[in-house]
Length: 212
Length: 212
DNA sequence: TGACAATGTGACCACATGGTCGTATAATCA
DNA sequence: TGATTATACGACCATGTGGTCACATTGTCA
Image (cartoon, rainbow over all chains, first blue to last red):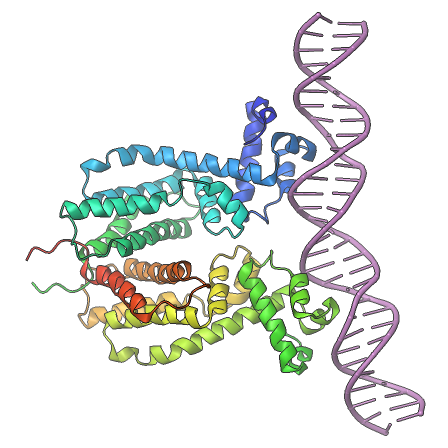
């Protein structure tokens, strides 16, 4: 956690630092990202920086937590209505909200993308600390739930499906980012919906030709 | 490409350097990986190193190409028998061969894993150069082929399926690496087969409960 | 106004990086 | 043997890193 001095800063200055750090950490991995660069971009002297944050790690964890909080907030409303939906619609919502989040907060999405590639164990575990694997267990819970409701076949391997959906989720995001990258956020919602539906249709109905 | 002097080296020394570099580049990203470290591990002086390689990039590309060649070799026999197989069996083979490769050449698999996370554009494009996206077009070709043969439903979105399979492929490898990581290569083939079959069964038959 | 504490600040530190270069050594050929 | 060329070698360089610290500036309260 940053020092008190940081929170006593005028909001402008504080946000400038946050913005600069977010930018730097979304461009480069933890070890490559440079404190000097962050200081330069935000126009604060090195000495001041170390009065606000104890460490590089301190800043990193702080920035990551901001992104995490933002994402949790963004998803919370969607998750609240989960119990009213079928599994298919739950996943649709999850996928589409994911793309929406990346569109609305590209810098946080980039931060997450970078984090998923992070090599530095210290940095990684400092961010994760506790409450990790949340999304894994969420998926498994959703699947088990749908099984008891008879929405999906009991023969389906829960772990395999959970893995498949997780990887699919991140792939959708990466794909959308690639295709409609930072330059053009003007893709329309219909495109996203169609693509997500194509993917989910495969998972739900399979690709084998029907023998009617 | 390395200098002539490198290839004139006694095989022992040459392999020592290759091993050390492989190790370093599989542990850390291009910019983090250290030439000093590689020199230390392989007991060659810095000056000698720069007589063998023009650059850090030179070494990096060389090492990556070794791994790529090894992988292509490993897969070529499997791909040769593709035309005798159904799409399902083609993918089974691909997935299982992938896991096998990682088991047989964990260091190369680790190199590939690291490369997929690489941030440095210069390093990335120097490795890719040409002939990229090979795997993407391979998948699409396989799918189109199966469609005309009537093996899979024409309603299935080709691009979406290709994307799904690609992401699934890398996920399987990552999962296996995680679960049976470098410590324990003693997982049996049956486990792998079952897991791969679970995944492919979902993709081919879907997860929806059958109404018999 | 004066005393004291909180902040601002940038020169500086030790260290590591990729890369160079002059020289020492070994190999080759006459 | 002596001359010439290829290779081995490591001290050295400029640059960048995360982090420190003595000192200047500002704010606060009496």
